[in-house]
Picture 1 (cartoon, rainbow, N blue to C red):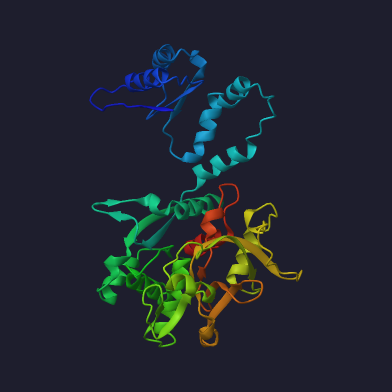
Picture 2 (cartoon, rainbow, N blue to C red):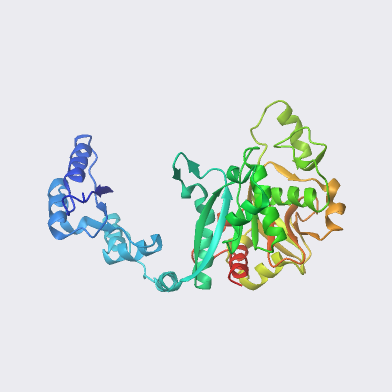
Length: 392
């Protein structure tokens, strides 16, 4: 694959860079079977002829892959170039019946997803100098897109640097966050910017703004509730303050020895883990309403784990994790007595996997990462329910 620039001062695609790249590869003994040309527009026949001549390939093996409005249009663009049957023929593999019906239906949904919904993502990895790196949380953005296609909505994402919310008063916080239909606090590590995240969560809780906390965002929601509802003023996570007198989020007991020795390998809970979802919660309703297709990834157990629930009446999902710290069960009763709902746990009940609030249109935090297994054709139920609440 190579790039064909189109300098604005010239107004045409230039094939010379990709020709030179092919010649350089040939000199190393690398001979391509196909050349896929990336460009701002379709590669015309004249440029295909030049690339074919430089590569020694038939012109039909020069594939045009122009910019499109959505990455989800790319499969249909490549299908128009008949790339699949060409590759199968080259590999001498028998053709199978092609069926792009579902994908074409998805593309129609992409085109029809026009209802605007404003989402503020409060993170700390997206800002670098004068630039915003939107792909820092690309899995979250794409999960929002998948849910938007399903609902006919278009998520308009704005990025808020969590550190920018620190040290400012409530009036300023309101002016920054009041424009959003929903707020997300995504994953993160360390102490930097956590006070800004907590301020954003407090605003969402008090003003009934739909909120979704992902992993670190669930932990920050726990701390915010402890400080401002339970009046545990020193509540914190031991990740940010190892000496806190109120560790509502702490490291798992069986990992403390490793961390004290600064042996960080193998101390993160990774991969798909089972989660028992409590009936009557927003989390349960989300999976029940939007996620009952049994081929969906959240129903697929991790074969390496044996911690399963055997009760047939329970809903057990399997979601991916990437974290080291957990909800501290010593404080569970204090939280639950004050409207804090633990909506998901490990099957044995020892690990808190999801939380939410009563009397709120949508305030959900998950210790797992639903964005990791959202797919264009199987949008994640949590994101659909979140966007649905934002639209309302």
